[in-house]
Amino acid sequence: MEKLFQEFNAVDFEQWVEKIYQDLKGLPEDLLAYSPESDLEVRSFYHRSNTPKGSFPNGKVSNQWKNRRKYPQTSNKEVLEDLNEGIDCLGLHFTTQQGFDDLTKGVQFEHIESDIYFTSPLEAAAFIGHSSCRLNMDIFERGITSGKWLYETDDFVTFFNAHPENQTIWVSGAMYGDAGATNSQELAFAANHLNEYIQLLINNGISLEQISDKIVVELSVTDDYFANIAKFKVFRKMVGMIYSAYDDTYNANAITIYARTTPRYLARNDRNNNLLRQTTQAMSAVIGGCDVITVQPLLTGKVEEDQLYKRMAKNIPLILKEESYLDKVTDPAEGAYYVENLCEQMLNQAWDYFKKVEEHGGLCKAIEKGVIQELITENRNYILEHIHEGDKTFLGVNKFPSTLEDWQEVEKEPSVEKVTFEPLQTFKVEEYFKKEAYEQS
Image (cartoon, rainbow, N blue to C red; front, side):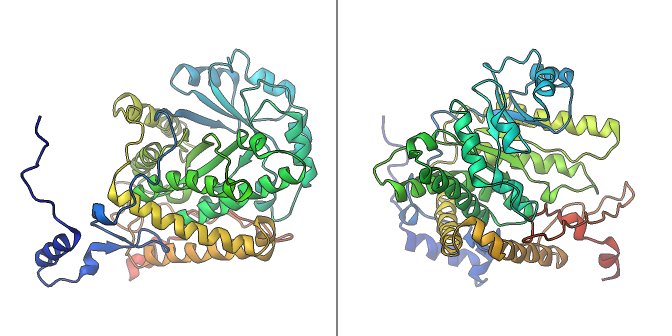
């Protein structure tokens, strides 16, 4: 069989760019470039001659993922119903051992995945459960969102040693994205977060090999489709770079990466747009190679609406798998010049942020000094500025608001008071938007 298109001569990059300039007909080249985020600059054209080739595999044998639902409060009946309707990963909140046993009665943990959130290391250390459960006792997240360190690092070491069969190193990287970080910043701070645990455990005589199999990292899924794809690929690369700093001969298995859609761009106004946002976010996360996806609905307090949004949150990943077949190709984005270049740029940016935090003494010291909070605040201001000026579209809010429903003013949630340092809180763009300001302008 003859090679397809072999009769055509290859076009080098210079010839290609020359043709692009001709087609622009004097218009500025800037029309073909844009900034998806404050620290990224991308073009609308790339060429194989200046593209890193295969540098960012998603690290998976297949592109299978789990469909997770998170349960702050629920009943055993609801859990079992969800398992029968396509949920195959449970995110449970632990209260007491008896409460957990009652909640999960009839759940066959050996056949599904699950993770359990604990509020204190003592209850986490005493927990009795299936060895397949992932245990979330992220002491750094508990402190960073509270504005003070609630637990000692020795508490975490005790918890880690109490559960040798479980994955117990949970890195809540999504909280940085939820707070308003760029994707590059979130990658960096999640890597600093992970490195803090690695240093802690190695200092307590635990080997890198013992550590690597215990890691679960949760990352947020924000609004930029291609940046999200790149994000999950880049983080796997960054983990390998961290490992090599401890042992440059160590080759670890791929870590477990959770993806969770962020509430940053969920809106109460024209809220059916949320379903579109969640679909593209989930799609980008699974193409990027996440292992578990959580689609978070925005609940309104109206029973019928909330039932719809919960059902759609459950069904979106199922549609991507059962109807779009996104699980059938191991690495759908591999070889895409745009994505590969975006990965390269994001990696460089994230590694610079990572080194900056380490120069301040690591995650905890940088939080205490306000370094991370300041960087995130700068990006929040950038986002709000571009939305208020109309450069960035928040559909149904700053552009094309619905005329079929009454406008809802959304008040900002009260800030958590500073205790020892400024806590990280969820950033919801709609809370900073006032319709009257736009009507008068």
